[in-house]
Amino acid sequence: MVDDQDGLKQAPAVLRDFFDSLTPPDWVDLSEFPAGVRMFHRNSKVILASFVSGVLIEGFMTNISKSFIITGRVRDQGVRRLQQNNRHLVECFLPGGLERYADGWKLSVRIRLIHAQIRRLLGESDEWDADAWGVPLSSAHLGFAITAFAARLLAHMRRLGASYTDDEADSFMAAWRYVGWLMGIPETILFRDEAEALKLFEIGGMCEPEPGIESIAMANSLVNSAPLLADMTDPEVRQAFAKYIYGVSRAVIGNKLAGQLNYPPTSTIGVLAWFRIRQRYERLMRNTTLRKLPLLSRIDRGMYDQFTGLIQVSAFDEAGISYALPDYVYNEESSEW
Image (tube, rainbow, N blue to C red):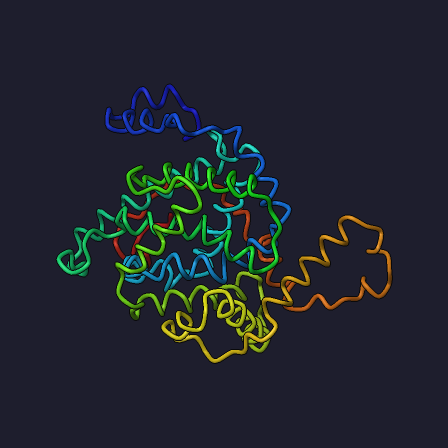
């Protein structure tokens, strides 16, 4: 992971073979990624809102949620899970973030190793019903999730007012395709472009049952973790912020899925329009001197800025990147990782 060639020479052959297998395939062209990176940073606030309120909810609405609920990874550490997802997103789209030894590359491979370890632990656990649920954290479920992280993210961004060109969208998808490959998703089920990713998302959704209790618990845990991630301590403030996110999420994912996930009743009137107006306003402020006008400088910041500002408080981890792996199926009984 850290270019320790001497240490790798002493490692077991299977580990050396694993890192040798991470040589990028021929279809990876790192020079394609900068356009998507620039688009990411130009729209970073709305990307974060789309990611938390839509993509994470949709990506984990399948039976993959059973793995996270059984282990307690989201149930007990929802804030940590949200922070790590956000950090991975940010690191992958820093300039050069997917080059070998960059943090986006490292975190993508780390996720692959963690999934493999949890897959082994769950496979050995009496709690996992392989006949009913198949392989835990299966490639099929991960392949479905990556389509949400990539193509569905673009769709939600567009609905919330993001601006990007077709070339930038293609670059963004190319970067996510490489991330999916690093995470171990087989090329046979790994999308090649946005249209194919959306088709895979549709097919994957047809193959899944309606969201179960695990998906419901996971979705609501993620939403209610956001106020804690923003370091809100007052219960009323946390409740108001969670209610706001529920409204944004319902507007993004639709009433049907929100109902299946037992979202509390919230109005979505004007939610998407307000986001789009704010995006236009911020683009205007970046490109003109109008930002100096007193009237515009006093436009309410409110919940919007608190929500979109989560990216600033969740992008980094004081502990750096840990390569420790869980050693017990239940998170509360495992060593720290």
